Length: 401
Ligand SMILES: Cc1cc2nc3c(=O)[nH]c(=O)nc-3n(C[C@H](O)[C@H](O)[C@H](O)COP(=O)(O)O)c2cc1C
Picture 1 (cartoon, rainbow, N blue to C red):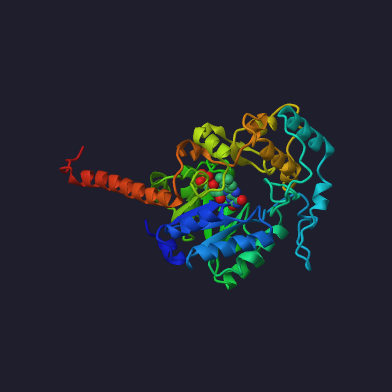
Picture 2 (cartoon, rainbow, N blue to C red):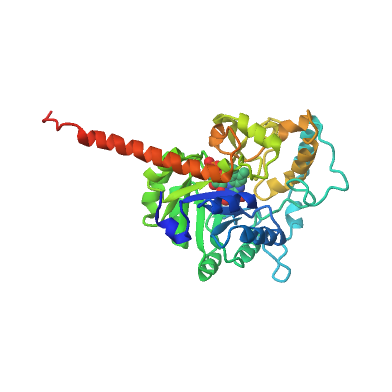
């Protein structure tokens, strides 16, 4: 399973694993792949602690950090979402003022329907998804830049990944000065070409099957199209890859490795609630729906009462990034708290971004076993294909038809 990317990052197998959970990142890196920590939900201070922990648990091996610096979001052209030059703070208040009352009132009505109580006054700031925070997270340029600054202080970080477009040119240059490679996710050939021109080192061609933000083209079509369009730039295949057979398929399409997300949600090390894991184990591919209800941009999520509510006729419609997540973050915290009670109606609202491979997630395994299973299955698959080639070669030569 070795490709040039293994030498580039000093890893055994070109399996790249996205996770918001440091334990998964470290476990994948220790098993020979490359773990990449999603920084979006962390403050710069918290990210520093997470990376320090990873440094202490990977024995000098390489890992990566994933940031979100979207090409477009509400207010970007007017200069909103930049970090203050002195404090590094990003002003969330200006965005909060842009959230319509109609949306807030409608969310409140949905919460009432599902018997979700108000946020208790003593809710800790780290409680749930948006507890105590504004929900702005790292969805803007400024937030992403703060994450990059932290990431580049850690020698183990050898890869910076950006979602929703190439990172700004100065960030690419800065990463390169630190000897750090840049990868960017894309779901369209034109975007991949733009990313290559911008100086991105590795393109992640992500098919619509993927969990999280995703485009409309399936991996089977997208991966070879992007491989051809950006050659010789290496491409990671993504979207719908949770095992060695799928990895072999992506690499047969020309990918130099695979970028995976959903498969890490149900591993032992994942910091995912038992309720969500149970829902994931019971879900089928069609339960992973594309919805704007999380961030305002289309993202594949587990179908829940929440995703369904945003499709209803009485829904005022989703808001552009970053307003949608900000409008919903307190609600998400309240849902998470209410769902702790066995039998609570709020449990119907609890979900998670996940891709169509959810149907393959049927049991909890260690991250290491997932990697080893990937490798075994990859070898079996390539052997099987090789045998079919050998059989064809062994056939007695046919005469002209
Ligand atoms: C729960 C979850 C959260 C995600 N969050 C992010 C994110 O913050 N940044 C990002 O670049 N990609 C994010 N993604 C997308 C993954 O990086 C990856 O591209 C995707 O999961 C690959 O497809 P797969 O889910 O079929 O493996 C997320 C995916 C999942 C499942």
